[in-house]
Image (cartoon, rainbow over all chains, first blue to last red; front, top):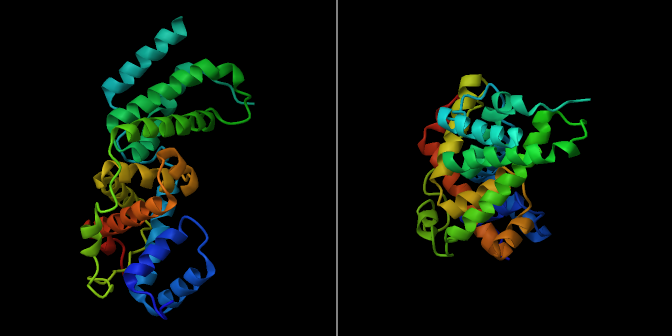
Length: 85
Length: 188
């Protein structure tokens, strides 16, 4: 193992660490790099932040567009068909 | 004990279900399909509702399955990116020696509602811009929270392939947010 991974390699490790527990050598290599590299440390933090934001449930206050009028009508009709039958 | 009233589902939970679906399916039409299929399935399954979850939670559970079904169907139709796809774009973010080409700027702490919804909008827009298959894999992992092993199995790809896709998707997402000026939001 090289004594120090590059930033590019570190982003691969940081990304994989979001998906599974890294093998010990990889984990140590990543920690070592993150301890001395602000850019990669921020990158790793931002991956966590992205996930946190994506996993926050949407709420009624969400201002993303809701169902379009036509779609709502269409779905209501489909439901009525089933309810009526 | 909660009760179900199918007549109120669309008015009370329609927008909520749509937004959840839209965030993962990256298409208005597919998200509308997901809502419709969810409500129809809910109607058929009403008898099995035990009343221990709120109607919204119960509907959301059905929606999650429908979203995964729709993504599965989608993935059969789109081509999975090959290993070489996006390699150049990744390389352009780094110098030859593997250092970042541009410094990674800190993100602010979005704490007002307006800043938060600006961030969410940017996240959704950036995810929409990923290549279709990459967007789906990214969403299954980051939004739906599926394990990578499950995702690989669904897609019939190797774990290494999955990590490559996710690594690229994450690099692009982060870069896209920065291009959208996100690093300035709330930054000190």
